[in-house]
Image (cartoon, rainbow, N blue to C red; front, top):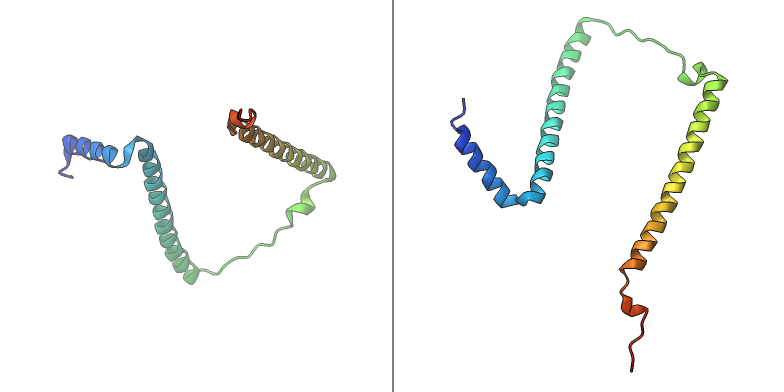
Length: 121
């Protein structure tokens, strides 16, 4: 058991909030979580590699040959996939155009009104 307890935990949380601020604290938590996840994945991979290596010493590997997935797709499915790809490409093109228009409007709105009215002499 740890000797921190509830009051110590509350104190640590308050210190973290003061040091990092309310905006950076969620980002910090996500970073710590992703780091722990990657660490667990790496250590699991190391232990799995050791197990696989031991298993390979004791048994022979069986290699299975499979048909390519492309050969199994019939013409109807192929047409459906091609249509979906075309639709996705068209959607991405339209989204890019919309983003470009929004950016132009944002830049136009950001220019000061003084540019439109020349100063009087």
